[in-house]
Length: 258
Image (cartoon, rainbow, N blue to C red; front, side):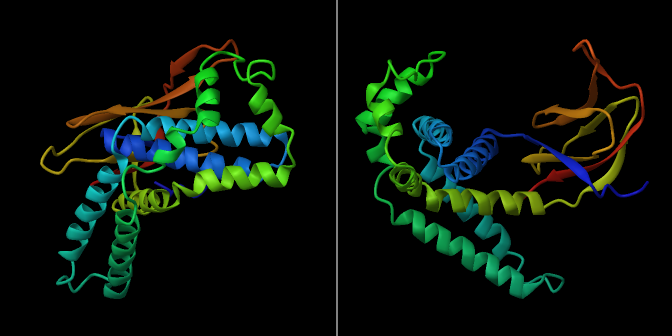
């Protein structure tokens, strides 16, 4: 089977911690992208991402979760020091990076971005954001006024608010990088568009990664839990109906366990 070179990567988290990290990675990337758009719509989109980030941080103590994960990965990697087949210079560099990220997070006293949670301006927008069209000019005159300010000022405000998450964002990115690199993608086939694999519950898989050639006319839908997961390849007809492919679909699979 030929290797997938130009591929679309599909990922499915198999625990809540990685699920949250992936959502935050997405939101941090989205906010960073829109921050460079100095139009009012760019500022709106950046602020929407920021409010979504704040909402996630309001549900759990993410600083503690990230610190636990950094410590776990550090302990796992430290055990590799005696392995002669390991690239020790790379291992040393990775351990140093994890240690530095942990120190950065420990410097924060209290919850991340606690001041933003009590910011009346942001809170007023967050309350209206759940209503369809609820952030119209007439609903939020303070927001409307802020959007009329020079682009440089709006960007400075947004960048300042996002800076609160810089350290934890870097830590999450480092953790996800380690998780992704813990598994090599290997070629497999979905017979008539379906693939299933049983997992070793003694070594929990955190993330399933599927690489599919861009020329394959269907997409991968991954679902699973602690014991097994499935990959279904689906295609959408012109009338919008979705059905499972009847073709044998070659793809590459990685089960990330670290």
